[in-house]
Image (cartoon, rainbow, N blue to C red; front, top):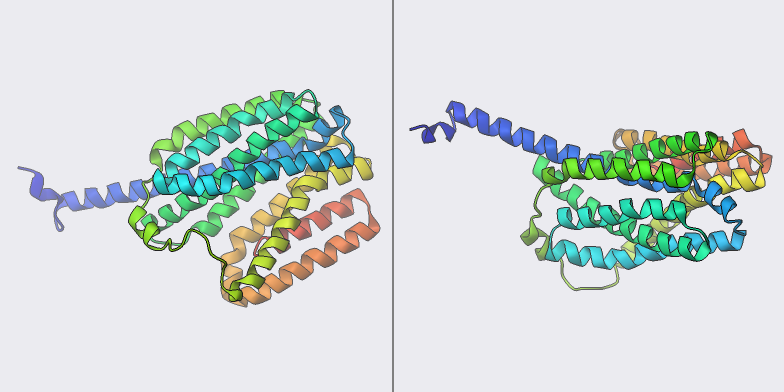
Length: 328
């Protein structure tokens, strides 16, 4: 009989080890691909923001309301995603929210007026917020399965997807491709990737997660308050780059829609560089020095760029913010 071959010391053990390595590789590819698709889909919307707001002739105040609807949808999704992860799994939850986000994108592109755009972005933000929570939870599960740190690289894949999405969006805007056609292609690509890697995701270790749960809600210890404020400041800055960099270039500096989309693309590529090199920089210089230096770089260079207020110089300012925030 061949059963004893699977025990250590036999040829079957080598096959089992290879199977484990293959499973780890597939799990890593799956979660990295979904981080990338999330960034690509989100950046596709951001890159066409000037085109969509221009088509609907929205005022700056209306644009702010539209952008708030995206955040509102995400806020609603955050606690729901956490509960679904506990009752179902991070893989199932992520697949559900990814499907919502991907399918909502073309609806954003065809919205005929501000009311429907707000509703579409509520759903889009809901999908993005839930996917954000669940794909990080799945990333932690894959990290445990692999036995090594991968979270920083996964965030790097998000930035890579954001850069690619912004670059494609800039090209589509320059070629005057309507947003709904552009978004339909992105949705098709997202569905193909989701379907291809869905079976490679891994089950959660529910016991370990529940044991660390504690009370349903409590304030963090005071030692974390300043770190929370730092995270808030970084999130506001990153949101400003995502939501307003293209509009600033297009509406206030008079650039084309294609050039305006480069604002977020430059921000994304410098953040990509910083995230993929961040672990090595932390080991060399330490986390506090990098956070201080990154914040100073972002503030000083963006401040100089705003003072000069020229399109190319503004791109350099946006890039400095991406590099500075990447390590926070």
